[in-house]
Amino acid sequence: MSDQAMATVLVVDDTPDNLAIMSDLLRDAYRVKVATSGESALRIAGADSRPDLIMLDVMMPGMDGYEVCRRLKEDRRTRDIPVIFLTARTDPDDERRGLELGAVDFISKPVNPPLVRARVHNHLILKSHADFLRNKADWLESEVQSRTRDVQRIKEATIVAMASLAETRDNETGNHIRRTQNYVRALAEHLSGHPDFAAVLDAETIDLLYKSAPLHDIGKVGIPDNILLKPGPHTAEEFEIMKTHATLGAEAILAAEELLDASQLSFLRHAREIAQTHHEKWDGSGYPAGLKGTDIPLSGRLMAVADVYDALITKRVYKPAFPHEKAMSIIREGRGSHFDPRLVDALDHIEDRFIEIAREFADD
Image (cartoon, rainbow, N blue to C red; front, side, top):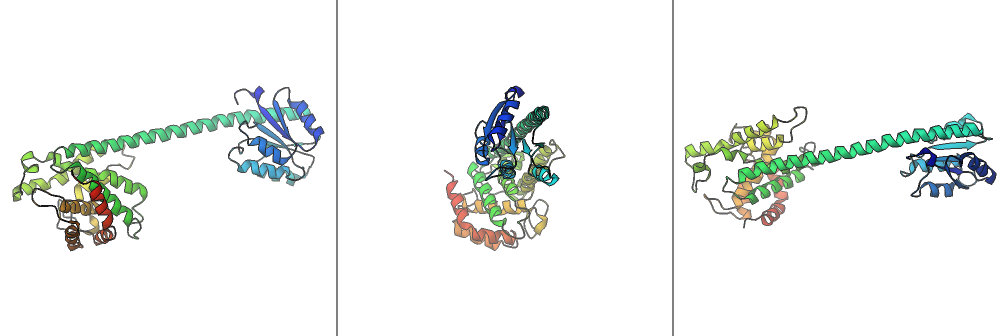
């Protein structure tokens, strides 16, 4: 309401004389609309051009004022319109009931004209202030949501940029990244119904795992070209250097994390865990730290299954592409030694989904 002189007051009363009296009192300062029943009052109040204040008779045939007020306060469109009850009843319980329903005031009949004008004036001022604060709160909420979306886009762009950097130095294709992140998500979604994982694999965490998975080999940017791009098997010494990519990747992500606000949980935590631990093995024989069992973060265990499966079904310089059945047989053999048994069991349930992902993101 930009100008109080242009405010609209709806007067609801089943007696024409009362409507005339109230209209005469208010029409010099406000636009006045009238309704002779509760039903018509609700129609007028819910229209596109809603009143700024409603003066409502309590005792009306059919739908009384209390019921009208209750419905007004239940409707999202009309709940913020102040309601002043007009009544000839003097019982305090009647007033209490009206206030509990959401009315802002009571005026007794016969009305006192100066009192009516003063109370209408004051409640319209209060509504104007409330509308201002409500609109400002809505604007602030919209701004927060917009900034949050911007921050989320920056986070996602950061991960994509870092993953793309690693991709330019690796023999493996970008489709390896797409396949593995989708494998991780499929496994995590299935495990979210498992009692051991339901508490940690909520929708937000699964989304972060999906977006972080492309950074699993970011550390390869620190491996010399003669080793990283070697077209044949590595020597023992070269493999020791190759294995350092897990630590290099974790250290690079940790350096990025330390630039973030320490009061917030870093969105890169899962990426760091994946980079550092996706070559660890369930029995403790993996690298770089020889972690065992549940000491390996779940993110790393998920990535281990995804990464090995994809390595098995795709051609590498040291091996041909294996069919799905052989890849599954090898992974099942690693149940309890290389892989968390529960993750292998989950893959058994969704292996058709892995086949679909492999086909959807197949290499050219």
